[in-house]
Length: 236
Image (cartoon, rainbow, N blue to C red; front, side, top):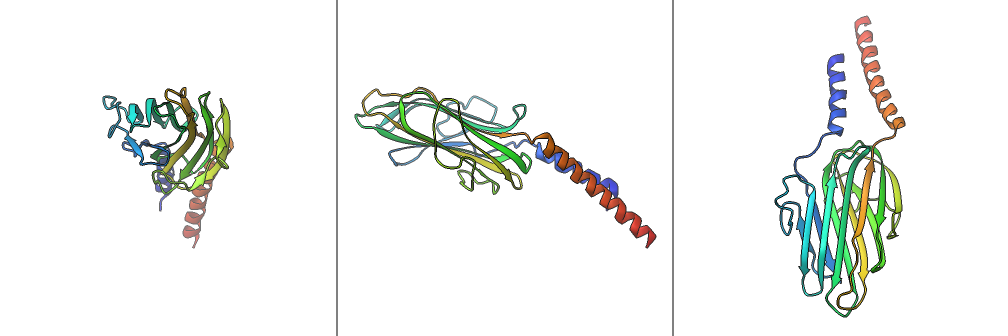
């Protein structure tokens, strides 16, 4: 293989890391007391943001059965936010329509993230009042499967707290990836009991300069090896 082809392949690989997918399986699933999941699909079922032409925004408000009313649920999936390569976020506010406590599980997932294979994950949660027993779990999956729980970003179910960083993880793998976060919380018993906006975010940070330097050194080593092999073949 010529030096030009090798260098071109290296550049193409670097560009692929930054590629943005045109389609993604961006979804939110909400279950109450372990019942059937209420699913919201980006630009699909139950998404009130259908008029938004930009993928990566889900909005819903309304009742889910006779148990609860979702005041608002807004989920976003972003792939370029400065130094943040990927961000999966959900914000939900709930009103209890019963006299008993309600246990919620909110799962958010998206696929086809194309960030580099050695990246730092940062999972963060933000919440105030109105809930008890809230936890956050975040996962990445290098098989690109929706709702997959392959590698945990958070070490375990982490309590939700205002502005709390709940876990970091250095991960390696081959893109594309999926991201999933699972939020569990309880709405207090009583008709009209509600939560303010409960916001949870999972971020993937850009590689540190050291990682970028190692990537560049790897490319230089690849080119250098090709030159040495080419010289050896000429001298043979």
